[in-house]
Image 1 (cartoon, rainbow, N blue to C red):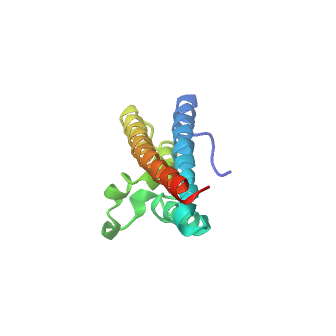
Image 2: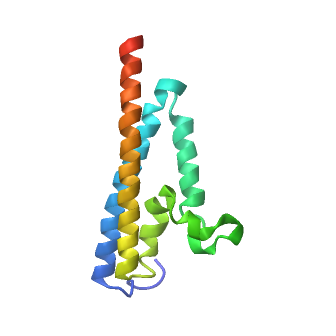
Length: 135
Protein backbone atom coordinates (compact mmCIF):
# COMPACT_ATOMS: atom_id res chain seq x y z
CA UNK A 1 0.00 0.00 0.00
CA UNK A 2 1.31 3.39 -0.91
CA UNK A 3 0.36 6.33 1.27
CA UNK A 4 -1.60 6.58 4.47
CA UNK A 5 -5.19 6.34 5.55
CA UNK A 6 -7.58 8.41 3.38
CA UNK A 7 -7.92 11.94 4.68
CA UNK A 8 -11.69 11.63 5.06
CA UNK A 9 -11.27 9.28 8.02
CA UNK A 10 -13.88 6.78 9.13
CA UNK A 11 -16.75 8.62 7.42
CA UNK A 12 -14.95 8.27 4.08
CA UNK A 13 -14.41 4.54 4.54
CA UNK A 14 -18.02 3.98 5.69
CA UNK A 15 -19.38 5.86 2.66
CA UNK A 16 -17.21 3.90 0.25
CA UNK A 17 -18.17 0.60 1.88
CA UNK A 18 -21.89 1.46 1.60
CA UNK A 19 -21.54 2.22 -2.10
CA UNK A 20 -19.51 -0.95 -2.62
CA UNK A 21 -22.37 -3.00 -1.16
CA UNK A 22 -24.71 -1.45 -3.73
CA UNK A 23 -22.10 -2.13 -6.41
CA UNK A 24 -22.03 -5.78 -5.38
CA UNK A 25 -25.80 -6.03 -5.75
CA UNK A 26 -25.62 -4.44 -9.21
CA UNK A 27 -22.79 -6.76 -10.24
CA UNK A 28 -24.79 -9.78 -9.09
CA UNK A 29 -27.74 -8.63 -11.18
CA UNK A 30 -25.52 -8.37 -14.26
CA UNK A 31 -24.22 -11.88 -13.57
CA UNK A 32 -27.78 -13.19 -13.46
CA UNK A 33 -28.47 -11.47 -16.81
CA UNK A 34 -25.40 -13.18 -18.27
CA UNK A 35 -26.59 -16.49 -16.87
CA UNK A 36 -30.07 -16.07 -18.35
CA UNK A 37 -28.49 -15.39 -21.74
CA UNK A 38 -27.70 -19.11 -22.00
CA UNK A 39 -31.25 -19.65 -23.21
CA UNK A 40 -30.16 -18.11 -26.53
CA UNK A 41 -26.41 -18.64 -26.72
CA UNK A 42 -26.03 -21.98 -24.88
CA UNK A 43 -22.92 -20.51 -23.24
CA UNK A 44 -22.77 -17.48 -20.96
CA UNK A 45 -18.98 -17.22 -20.83
CA UNK A 46 -18.51 -14.89 -23.78
CA UNK A 47 -21.33 -12.60 -22.60
CA UNK A 48 -19.86 -12.47 -19.11
CA UNK A 49 -16.37 -11.81 -20.49
CA UNK A 50 -17.75 -8.99 -22.64
CA UNK A 51 -19.40 -7.51 -19.55
CA UNK A 52 -16.08 -7.73 -17.69
CA UNK A 53 -14.23 -5.98 -20.52
CA UNK A 54 -16.75 -3.14 -20.48
CA UNK A 55 -16.22 -2.85 -16.73
CA UNK A 56 -12.45 -2.70 -17.23
CA UNK A 57 -12.56 -0.11 -19.99
CA UNK A 58 -15.52 2.06 -19.05
CA UNK A 59 -15.65 1.51 -15.29
CA UNK A 60 -12.43 3.23 -14.39
CA UNK A 61 -10.19 0.29 -13.53
CA UNK A 62 -7.42 0.93 -16.06
CA UNK A 63 -7.67 4.71 -16.05
CA UNK A 64 -9.71 6.93 -13.71
CA UNK A 65 -12.76 8.31 -15.50
CA UNK A 66 -11.68 11.94 -15.23
CA UNK A 67 -8.47 11.18 -17.17
CA UNK A 68 -10.26 9.94 -20.29
CA UNK A 69 -9.88 12.21 -23.34
CA UNK A 70 -12.66 14.52 -24.47
CA UNK A 71 -13.36 12.13 -27.33
CA UNK A 72 -14.62 9.57 -24.77
CA UNK A 73 -16.87 12.12 -23.04
CA UNK A 74 -15.61 11.45 -19.50
CA UNK A 75 -18.57 13.32 -17.99
CA UNK A 76 -20.94 11.01 -19.86
CA UNK A 77 -19.04 7.86 -18.84
CA UNK A 78 -19.74 8.43 -15.15
CA UNK A 79 -23.45 7.88 -15.77
CA UNK A 80 -22.97 4.40 -17.26
CA UNK A 81 -23.62 1.36 -15.06
CA UNK A 82 -19.96 0.33 -15.32
CA UNK A 83 -18.86 3.52 -13.60
CA UNK A 84 -21.50 2.97 -10.92
CA UNK A 85 -19.96 -0.44 -10.29
CA UNK A 86 -16.35 0.63 -9.91
CA UNK A 87 -15.21 4.15 -10.73
CA UNK A 88 -17.72 6.28 -8.87
CA UNK A 89 -17.58 4.46 -5.49
CA UNK A 90 -13.80 4.29 -5.47
CA UNK A 91 -13.60 7.95 -6.53
CA UNK A 92 -15.20 8.85 -3.20
CA UNK A 93 -11.94 7.97 -1.47
CA UNK A 94 -10.20 10.87 -3.17
CA UNK A 95 -13.03 13.41 -3.13
CA UNK A 96 -15.50 12.97 -0.30
CA UNK A 97 -18.43 15.32 -0.10
CA UNK A 98 -22.08 14.68 0.65
CA UNK A 99 -23.28 15.88 -2.76
CA UNK A 100 -21.05 13.44 -4.60
CA UNK A 101 -21.98 10.63 -2.22
CA UNK A 102 -25.67 11.30 -2.85
CA UNK A 103 -25.08 11.37 -6.62
CA UNK A 104 -23.24 8.03 -6.54
CA UNK A 105 -25.91 6.36 -4.42
CA UNK A 106 -28.74 7.71 -6.59
CA UNK A 107 -27.00 6.53 -9.76
CA UNK A 108 -26.48 3.09 -8.25
CA UNK A 109 -30.11 2.86 -7.14
CA UNK A 110 -31.23 3.98 -10.61
CA UNK A 111 -29.15 1.27 -12.30
CA UNK A 112 -30.27 -1.36 -9.78
CA UNK A 113 -33.87 -0.45 -10.59
CA UNK A 114 -33.31 -0.37 -14.37
CA UNK A 115 -31.42 -3.67 -14.42
CA UNK A 116 -33.97 -5.19 -12.04
CA UNK A 117 -36.83 -4.28 -14.39
CA UNK A 118 -34.89 -5.62 -17.37
CA UNK A 119 -34.06 -8.77 -15.43
CA UNK A 120 -37.72 -9.27 -14.55
CA UNK A 121 -38.74 -9.10 -18.22
CA UNK A 122 -35.83 -11.31 -19.29
CA UNK A 123 -36.76 -13.90 -16.67
CA UNK A 124 -40.37 -13.94 -17.84
CA UNK A 125 -39.25 -14.44 -21.47
CA UNK A 126 -36.94 -17.28 -20.40
CA UNK A 127 -39.70 -18.86 -18.33
CA UNK A 128 -42.05 -18.85 -21.33
CA UNK A 129 -39.32 -20.38 -23.47
CA UNK A 130 -38.85 -23.21 -20.98
CA UNK A 131 -42.59 -23.82 -20.74
CA UNK A 132 -42.99 -23.92 -24.53
CA UNK A 133 -39.88 -25.92 -25.40
CA UNK A 134 -39.75 -28.04 -22.27
CA UNK A 135 -37.30 -27.96 -19.41
